[in-house]
Length: 378
Ligand SMILES: [Mg+2]
Image (cartoon, rainbow, N blue to C red; front, side):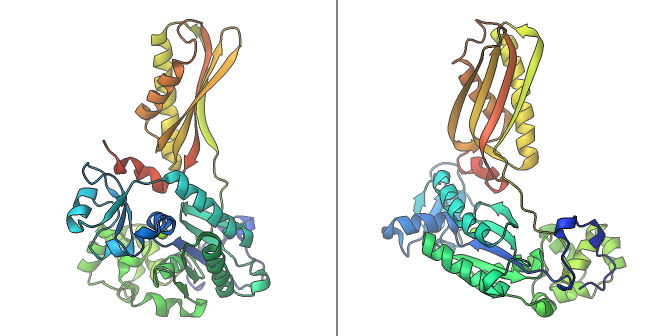
């Protein structure tokens, strides 16, 4: 890589630039827990060993599958499938309701192992992360040894297995982690990237969904090697600017940095009113606006919350807060509003004039769990 003019190193933030001597080669790990939710339950309940386990909604309702053990996957059960269909496919499957507090606790233990290795940890979901270890090989000396050590530590600490892919980019690391699942370690050295990618079906490339796969197959493209045979002009003509990405990915070129971000602790909106709010109807109208604002913020950041806090400041500047936690993370305006209304009943709103109202969402979960409500639409 590097010969292609499409690389834009100058746009990379300073801290992401590497010192001379690394020749631009990064060492990136993609760590992906194996069947995470199901694995946690199977670890904690020996009677589940070797059985098809399905974590998700009630098969008698309209809920969907959140995760399936490998045993369940043999029956064709996969996540996002209706739980009722999963039961039809495998009547002896054990159905378990998700316990996100438990998964989050495990996730925190696992991520703290990652962060002992490098501060450059990018969270993709509760059980998936990118680690940039280029400058954090430490006493291990190689990314492969770092990955092996992480796998050992995770197993010792949690009795759960993590599959890791090692490569010079996010693109390659992510594909690699999936290559030898479960409990696998796949290392793609920088010089072997093309050899690794070429035989893969194009849909394995990041950003190649069903529509692109179909469009590519119409061009006679099945594998990454086929894709590499198409010129940049041809790809730009067919896919617009996405064609440039396809052209780069087919060559294993992917400069996306690993972006560690501090998880946001809370997200809120509040408003001070020029005229005090006196009636409950006025208060309710404002709560609706605030809930909409918080919901939009959560949606934008791909977050959902399990705690909602209402802040009320009376005309005399006395301020009270009321909080409520919900079992399933929420982000929709109507759900936030419902909580805020309940909390409002625990204040003197409507009986005392108010000068300020605020709604804050906290205990935030990452976006991968946004489908939470799919598990229990009822
Ligand atoms: Mg996983």
